[in-house]
Image (cartoon, rainbow, N blue to C red):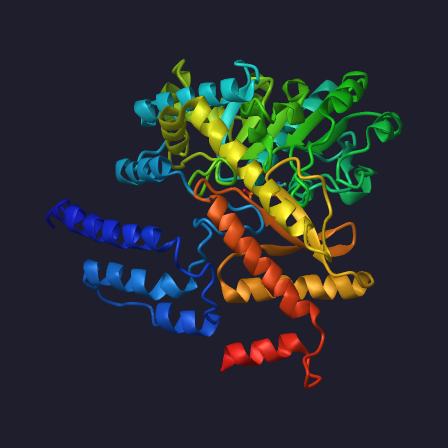
Length: 493
Ligand SMILES: Cc1ncc(COP(=O)(O)O)c(C=O)c1O
């Protein structure tokens, strides 16, 4: 068989054309095209192919067939959940990562990628104001970063209690108390259950109206925890953007005989880069471990997360990279960065490359401008909505997000109206907030994470949100029919 190198140019050119056409359509295309899963199955699925097909036809069909079911979350008016766009330079760098196709767990498997990731890690630590001696690994996202950090926390806490997890496993190990805010993200609970910590061992600290841990409760909850104790807080709550009080938490953890403080910074850690916002993360340099995402507020292409552990040797020890087998002894003996010491994955792509490219291209000031812009735009939207009678912003807007409710009736009426407004907006496809919950209430979650969003996107989206509220809040038209039902019927015609 001959080499296939001559196929790359044509196929990559084809990919390039499809990719750029998609990206350039984002400002105009509906955020969601509402295709059914059956229609997608019809277009994409089918019998297992038994014989080869022409690769360029496959690529063209793929691009055409998936188009209807792509969510325009990389565009300027996607405001739901916590999904960012991608800086153009990072996406371009990520294409090179695919072309180079390097495997990065060991320095020897790709020296250049190891040094790019080492440099990116050093730059990120400096940008965030964290210790240059901390260990930083690149993960698939915050979930894997949380998992990595909590494994390190568990092993270190048990080591201090005289128990070696690597040798003795977990059966019979001392129980670990866990302290979390009542707003902790589900991915923390998911990771806890994966590392052998059950819900019975969890103590909860209450939060205030902004969903921030109430400082006064911290010492009392910690005083109830005898033995190894893992405390998890948040830098940026999904529904309010609130940051927990890290100094107060670090004080309590430091006065406990065996405690570890982890911060889930998936949503808001990057605030540490901005001179205007870094007051929000005061004390973050004192915490033992942090997870964050590259692919949310930092606008890396999927997937990219980061785990940071203050004691790099604790991370390396928990990842167990020192014992990889004879065929890797030479690789592991190298003094240079072996990524396997900084994370769970063995083989993986070089996720640090898009991070490196963004920092090099934007510099600290460019990144800061992006972060501040998102917060100013979230504030701008909140101000516009707050000015409308019947729309309530539930939290102080300190970061890139807020939660809103629509209507003035009782809880149930406001919940229903809020849901209808958000669903209408999603159906229209001009802008895309999502539904969420806030201390038992149904809400509209609005988050600004994209480097592409500008003031006009906010102003036009505000008009759409207010218009959707006006339609949905009017219960009946002159004929006595529900107005929203009438509007849905018209849309269907
Ligand atoms: C607060 C918080 N933590 C962790 C995660 C998990 O992040 P990922 O989906 O990147 O794994 C999310 C996801 O939205 C989040 O909002």
